[in-house]
Amino acid sequence: MSADIEHALELAREGPFAASTSDLHFESDQAPWHRIDGRMLRMDLPPVAGDSIRGFCEAYFGKRDYERLNGNHGSADGALHHPRYGAIRLHAFRGDGGIALSLRLLSSGVPSLESLGLPPVVASFADFPSGLVLFTGPTGSGKSTALAALINEINRKHARHIVTVEDPIEYRHRSVKSLIRQREIGRDVTSYGESLRGVLRADPDVILIGELRDAEVMSACLQASETGHLVLSTLHTSEAAETVARIVGVFEGGRQEQVRMQLAQSLQAIVSMRLVPDASGRGRRAACELLLNSPAVRSQLASPERALQIRNTIETSRKDGMQTLEMDLSRLVSERLVTYEAALSASDYPEQIRVAAGIR
Image (tube, rainbow, N blue to C red; front, side, top):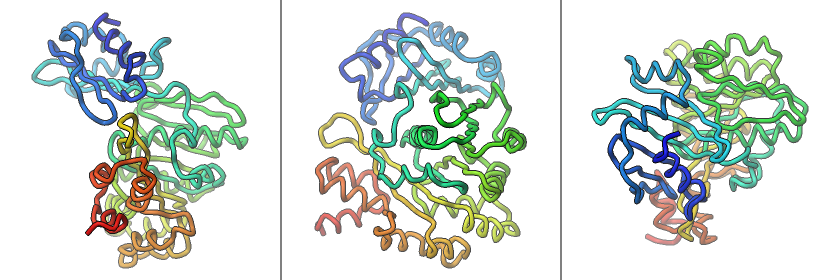
């Protein structure tokens, strides 16, 4: 590893802001940047040479990914498990300034659900024998970390066979009560679709798919969740109702009714996540929306007209464990864990937070 990139990693992992640093960014002949509690800041370090970035990519990306970076694809993804700096997710792409490199710094070890501050009901998802559980939210909202924590919960409580397909593998699990096998796109299989065609023959109880990227993968996951498997995955959507609409909308008109019925029967829960700056100024807090497949939700999932009522059902079903993102943000504000301004910035419905706070 080049000395300038290693120095930036050392500061990020072991410096005064180590607990709050999530990402490092390098570009040829520019000083590196880091993201602290969601804010991008330039590091007080010398510029990093383009040769250092290219050398890092050549050393730590696999041969196939390095060829993709230099070829028509122009980008590459990978993962690094460094003996000193821990687990790091890698992304590089070519641009007008040469190769740009981004490093996502992952938690050491597999996190627990409790450490992430997620609602206690999320831990009960580990007990689902089958069905579909989705974690959604924008990039950097903690979806992959929450998935890893849920796998950890299953591994701690149940004797199951868990197969994961990830791009790339971020958290490496050790079999405890469950047998866990992890596959990586590019290294072990070419695509999520290809992996799903074979994974059902491996006798899994739990299947983790890193992301529902297209109709082929969504269809296979729905089918697996209907046939006695617990399927866990992610989507880049902001709320539960949007997630349902996104899944249904991927399919052609003639398939949509069938997909709605499959969702109504197999969906167990949707957790829509945001990370919000802590009121202390250090760290971030998880806020989330929770949709559980109650009888009312099930009837709404099956009907395009009634699907418009999903958000209203979440708002009125707190006793069943459901909540909108705004309800959770309002709770965090009332407990003085996040500021009112930070909650407004994280919400797509800020007026609901204003009403909850008694501000007109």
